[in-house]
Image 1: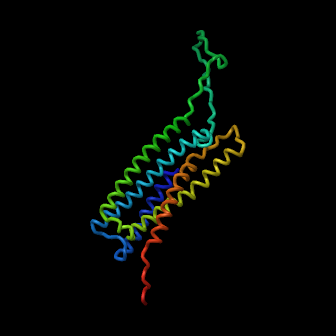
Image 2: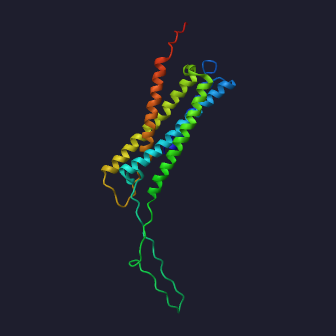
Image 3: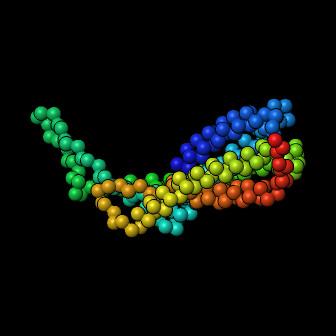
Amino acid sequence: MLVGVLTALGVLGAIGLLVVLFLQRGRDGIDLSLGGLLRLYLYLASLAGVIAFAIGVAGIISYVLAAAFGLDVIYGGPRPNIEPAFPVQACPPGTTCPPFPSPITSQFVPAPDDRVRQQADDLVRGVTFVIFGGVFWAAHWWARRALAGVADRASGLHRAYLVLGTAIFGIATIALLPMGIYQALSIAIVPPNQFTFRPGAGDALSGGLAALPLWLGYLWLVQRALRTAPPTSPTVA
């Protein structure tokens, strides 16, 4: 769920950012020189690295929550074990059918719980995306610092990057976290129905918890940029 939300918001936000910067060309907007386009790529790639990092954090959170509160809360369930149906013996006419094991005497082996595999898969996915996203973001952050230095923080592109990150993770937080908390409370409070499979809160809850600190971090960076921004001179009519 978090993958779809962040991917959709990231694509829409990047398109909106490009449109706004293109319309503001020449007014601290987009620079179509080679250096300006490289800086634009570095910012978009940095945001992509943060999104991959958030997806990895969500996978690790799902694994930890499942280990702490149980598989039912995070992955739903329990899934019913359906015994295999015993086929009806059909023998050719005039022949004697061999003995067929009855359902009562046969040993039924329950199928393995696929939620255990899903929990392990979340851990592997989480660690992979955290490492890849962190390295990808760090490489592009270093390239931004080497290309433009600290003075780039005052540029319109840097401010647009911070606002876009705040909007993406803020929307993801408000869309996923309340739903995940509601699903977790519903599983904990509402009695289960034995004939209905109840989905878990893992996708929404872990995604919201992963997006929340990133949203707060971007919001803090925006507030810091506002405090350190030089005052604008009044426009003379």
